Length: 432
Ligand code: KE4
Image 1: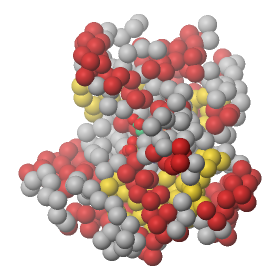
Image 2 (image 1 turned 45 degrees about the vertical axis):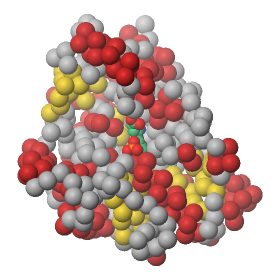
Image 3 (image 1 turned 30 degrees about the vertical axis):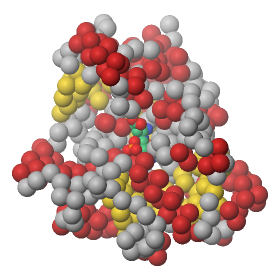
Image 4 (image 1 turned 90 degrees about the vertical axis):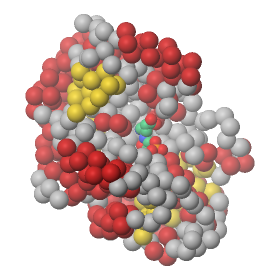
């Protein structure tokens, strides 16, 4: 039964007059799933309530940050306490020292870190730093990977750009776009070819170690190791964009899970516990190039904001200080994966499922999705039917075939079993 959404619809009509597409980030507009977006009133644990009073089990989790669940009491308490002391000073605080200590402890490849306000700021700054450190100008990214909306990344980008079919954005100067070389995810020979042609102009390779922005696409065995070896031998910096995977796949992120060490790491999402935070960091001799200790300039009025540091540190301590956190998350994620795959198998449907830890995607293609090309074989229209049918059954998925869904510690077995039951009915509808 379709959810009642008259209040959301009225708000959306007003929003469209005031904000491009009625949203502050494109993928929220539900353009790819053929219905208007829901306006959210509040969230708690694994649940979202929209402004019409409908309640949903949430698998977006603000696109990754809400790994401990929405409105966690410890995070809220800490935030209230911090806000009472003031919301921003534009001056150093002890909180930033403690956050930096925590990041360097959890991610050993980060010997020095700079806090910023978004994942885009983190990746944009990391690329500028790589260019400054190497004196080179070109970068390699992978088609279908998304590193935020800085000019250099909007070439064959994933996430909303891929969802809306605009992987290359207008407004990016051709001269700058030419400095972004495109390789194929999971295809080391495509990287070797670029290095053979342009090796001594390439400052960095930036990669999502587990791609989450063309849907969830794991690295094939040896891919990350080959990238590491190639970058080392060519004096190219390897940047792991762990904005999505950081603190999600393990306390030390994908680099801990796969045992591959990048030169620089970018972080976001979970590190802010739902408040705007990003970070970039790595080897000291690289990071000391960043102003004011070095000549590479990067700054931010609200970088290291005390409220964002508080929410982030409280969230990180809930992960890092809980010996069974990641086992619990894996059990929940495996329960959902097994349930969905059993439904797909019992209905004999031509779908494939990718999962790494608590990030996963059900692809509407029988093809095993290993890169942008295979991701594009998915039937996004049929996915849209599935999305709408799940929404009508109280399950809030990522509104795009080319995004990952996220499990949190707040999801119960009952939530998961309800999701599996709803997927059986929704898949029947999508294939009827
Ligand atoms: P932000 O600037 O949106 O904080 O982070 C950009 C970014 C960088 N790197 C990776 C691997 C990312 O996944 C992201 C942002 N992810 C998307 C969702 N796939 C954000 C959602 C949105 O654009 O609204």
